[in-house]
Image (cartoon, rainbow, N blue to C red; front, side):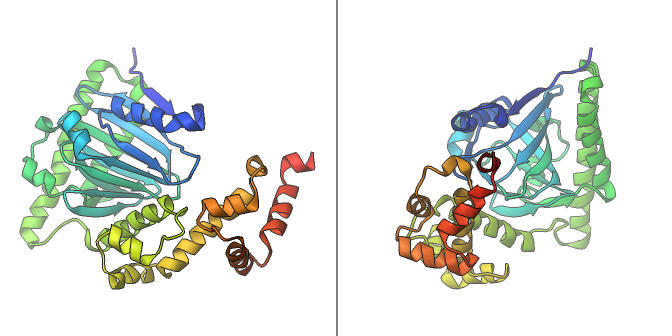
Length: 336
């Protein structure tokens, strides 16, 4: 008889129940955490959990615009003493742990452990990634060696990492065909392959006297993603600006502007664009046609109608009312 997985898809729950459903899924996955959706009123994510012997493989998909935090309190409440490896197959995922940051893109894998707080940031593009977690005692490396990798990244589609990545991906695809005895043996094989990959890169560290994993540029990218998440959470605050952002992240204003300059924008321009994007989306949403334009503008940080109208017309070339009229005119409900 084949193995059976457990699936939790937030799309099957009312919007108000989705964060709670996801928190329950994370508890089942042995990694309790606090989740915040960066898109007001929505939250989407799906996880398929595939138990092995003492560990588990999970496939997460439709995971976007979300921050997840495993806080010191979570660690104190429950620590399964697990290592985790995340293999990204789509989208982007920012990870901060052990004072290290990395931005994982497709084809990269990152590392973490259950005994330390961790922050995870998913960007706007719906992502997909595989998670392999297993008891720490199974890994050949010492805890100190593994901790050096937390928050950093390695490729899993080339070199020795490809052997491990393809094995885990294949195991997830063929999981239903496995027996419990297969699962025990395959878990041991996955841990052995991972040990070989990590030892290869740690040996290269020792040989060349430098880090084998990349963190410099990706560290700043994760910081940008973290700041973007903060902005998305506080768009309704009219006082949101560079000073507040810099203070919240313990940065100088000069460094904050440099981060945004590297992304071709400024903090104020980024905030304005995010607010206007949310306003355009809500104005075009038939489900929100009962809300006044002023109500929509205020919920995204424009308390003064005149100021919102000017900003909206400058950005779109039309007034908010005309934009809303044209958008709703082309909805299926309006046409019917």
